[in-house]
Image (tube, rainbow, N blue to C red; front, side, top):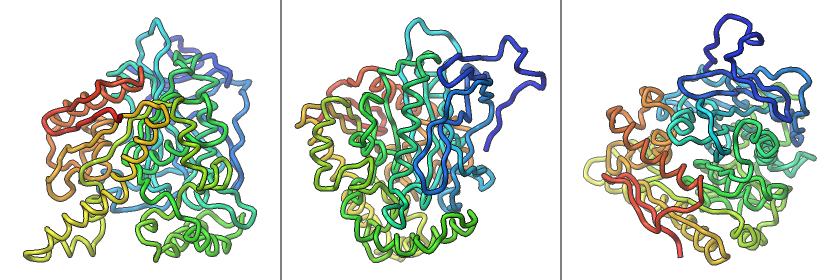
Length: 455
C-alpha cells in the first residue's frame, strides 16, 4: 500500500497538522496537494466468521496517516495487469476494518456532500485505498468529502449460513462503516443527511443490497450503482450450499494461508452453475441483514421513495473477462470467425448479466415512487482489446492519470484525454450526489457517456 508523506517531526506539536474532534476521538490527519486526508481509521474490529464490532471512542488521539490495509485475499494477476496494480500493493490485515476520509483543504461555509466509495472485485479482490482508486481528484475538483471503505472479502466476508458461520459479513462491515460516517462526518465538515453510496461491480451490487438491508435507514440518501452484475444475484442458494460443503472443511482457527487456499477450492466448487459461477461469492438472501429472496422486490419498492438512484453499465462489460481468459483469447484469434464470435458473446453476456437487470431495477424504482436515472458508458468502445469493458469507468472517476500508467485497460490513451473526460464524469457524479437530480437527458461527448431519466 502507499504511505502518507509526513514530515519527520512530532506531528502532535505541529499546529499545521489537521485535527478533527469527533465522537470517535481526536483524529490527526495529513495534507496532500490541496486535500486533507484522514486515512486508515479503524471503524470496527472482527473475529473470524463473526459480525463486526463497531470501534469504540478513543481516549487517545487517532493517528490517521497510514493507508488502510487490504482485507486478506488471493492475488489475481490478470486483474492486476488490467488495472496496473502490483502485487506489493496488497498489504493485508485480519481482525481490523478501516476507512479513509478525503476532503478539500479549503474551508467551506456549509457542510459538504459525502460520497462513500465501495470498491468492486467480485467480492474477493480490492481495497478502498489502492492507488488506482484514489479519491483525491473527485474530492478536490468537486468540493465533496469522499470516504473509501475496506471490508471483508471471499470466504471471510461473503459466504455463510453453514457451520454456525453467519452470511453477509462483508455487508455488515459496510453498515458499520456507514454508522461511523453518520456519527463522525459532521465533525469533519460533512453533511450526514447528504450521503451518496457509489460502488462499481460487486461494490455496485453491495450498494443495491444496502438499500434493503436492515439497519441502513437514514444512513444514506442516494446510490450510484456502476456495472452491478444484478443478472447473477438471484437463484444462488444451491450454488452457495455446494460451496458451503467445501468451506466447512476449514477450521475457524486455520492459518490464513490455508483459508485462502481453501477459498480457491470453494470457488471452483461453484462450477456448473452457469454465469453465476463467474462471481461465486456474494450477498445471500434470507440471512441477516437481507430479506428472503421472494421479498426482495417488495423491499426495494419500499426503499424507492427514500433513495435517489443513478445506475448504469458499460457498452461492452464482459469484454474484460474475455481478455482475461486464455481460452477466449485463443477463440478471438481464430481466423475469419473468432472476432465475430467474441463480439456476439460479449453482447449477449453483457445484456444478461448487466443491462437487462439494470433497466428492471430502475423501472421498479420509479414505479414505486423514486427518482432514477440510467447511463451507458461508451468510452473506448470498439478499441482493441478491451473496448468499453467492465471497469473502464474507474480511470475516469478515480486516481490520477499517473495512477493508471501501468494499466493495460487504458494503454495508449493519452493523459490529456483521460484527464479531460475524467473531470467531466466526476462532475456528473458529484452533481447527482449534491441534489439527487440531473437533467432529464444528457451526454458527455465525444462518445463518452449518455444518461436519461427513467419514467
